[in-house]
Length: 281
Image (tube, rainbow, N blue to C red):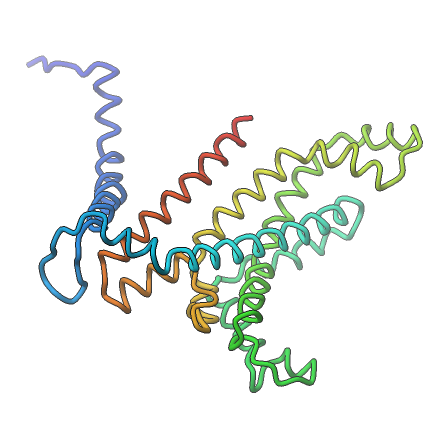
C-alpha cells in the first residue's frame, strides 16, 4: 500500500515539533505564567490568589525598586569596567610578546565555579581571620560596611571574569594586520599614537560587543553577591537577582517577586536591543 509522502515543508515542520514543544514547556509557559502572576496577590505558602491589577508594580515603584536598581547599576558598571580594563591591558601585553604560558595562568580564575570563587573571597574578606586583614594588619569588616561590601563583591566578580575579557580582546588583537602598526611606526607614530590611531579603531567593534555582553551578564548576576553578602548589609548590595530571590523564597510573596522580575526583564530587553544592534553594525 502506497502511503502519502510528506513534502519537504511538512517534513521540516515535523522536525521542528520536538524543539518547539521543549521551548513552550521550559521557557514560554513559565515566562507567561510568571508575568501573569505579577498581576495577582499570591503567596508561596497559602493556596489561592486574588487579582490586584497593577498594585504590585505600583508598590515596587513606590518602594524598593529604585534602591535595587541603583545597587544593580553600581555593581554592573563596576564589575564590567574593571575586568574590561584589566583584560584589555593583559591582552595587549600578551599580544606584544608576554610569554604564552601566562595565558593558562590568567585563565585559572575563569575555570573555577562561581560559588567556589565566592567562598574563596568570603574567606579573604573575613573580618576576624581573613587574609586581607592579615596582610594589611587591620580589623576592617569588609562585608559589614555598605561601601566596602559593594567594593568587595565587585572585586570578587572582577577576579572571576577578567580572563574571559582578556581572551575575547586578545582574539581581536590577533586578527589585526601587523602591517598597520609597521606602517604607522614608519610614519613616526609612537606606541601611544599607534594604540589610539590603529588599535582602538580596529578593536572598537569586538571591544563593544565584549563590554556589552559582560554588562548584560552582570546585570543578572546572583551567586557572588548572595554568597558574600546575601544582599546586605542593610540592602546595600541587594541587586535585582537577590531581591527577586528574597521576595519569593524568604518573603513567600510570589506576586511582588514576579512583578519585580517583570520590570527587571524589561530592562534586560532594552540591553538586548542595544546588543543586537551593535552585533549587526
